Image (cartoon, rainbow, N blue to C red):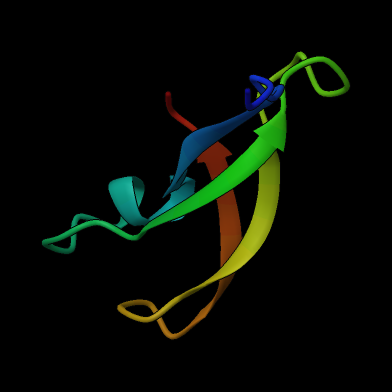
Length: 60
C-alpha cells in the first residue's frame, strides 16, 4: 500500500499584479511539505504581464 505523503499543492499569486490595476492574474502551482513549512510560502517568480520578477504569496 502507498503511504500518504506530507506534500500538498499550493497556489501562488502575485502581490504586485493586484495593485497595478492591470487585467488578469499571475498564478503558479507548486508543492510544499506541510510538516516542515507550516507558514505560508513567499517566493519571487516571473510575472509575464508586468515583465519582471515579483513576490508571489500562497493563497490556498
